[in-house]
Structure formats: structure tokens, C-alpha cells
Image 1 (cartoon, rainbow, N blue to C red):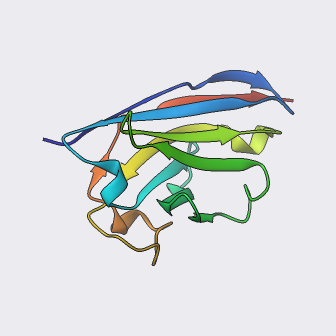
Image 2 (cartoon, one colour):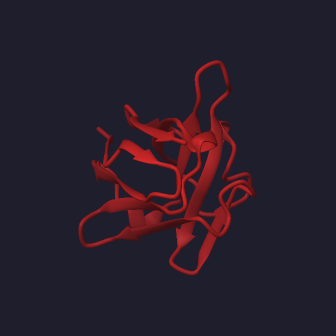
Length: 125
């Protein structure tokens, strides 16, 4: 049974940083594409970043240059380093896993089979 458990959310001021973690069990993260998504109140869930390999990643335009997705295969854990946070980044952040091996449509929710429970990120101005 696949389980994804996020952690690392919190409240920060604009310009601050947070690092989210997603610990996976029942699933080998190095074999497949994984992603981070977020959902703000009243809005649809949107893709933030996805990773196929250490050198092949994909980002939403709104976070390019500020967020970095990475993974530690030895710990079977996915990360999202978020720098220069803005109030618009406030949302529930979700880790997701797919059985696919390419980044094609990797920022679309329908590509993913498994989801974590989410971790809240709040950025104040």
C-alpha cells in the first residue's frame, strides 16, 4: 500500500523560505515521476513542480526560480525547497506519485495515482 506523508509546512513572512518533505512507503520514488501540487481556498488544485530525475524537472511558471524539487532516493523522500515566498503561495501543498516515467503532463492532477494528506503553507505580507 502506497503512503505519502508530507511535513514541513508552516507560517512565514513574505520573502521567507520553507522546505517541504514527503516520505514515501510502499513505493520506490526513484522509479517514477513525483510531483508537488497546491490548492488555495476556493481554487482548483494546481501543479507546482515535478521530477523525473535529478536533471529532469518541471515547474509552474509562477514558481520558477524560487522553488526547487529534489529527492533523496536513500531516504525515499521527496522535497520542495521554497524560497522568496509570496502571499500568493499560501495554500495546502500535496505530494503526489504516479506510475509514469516521463514528465509529459506532469503538472496535471490526472497523471497521479497517489496523494498525501497535505501540509499547510501560509505566507503573510
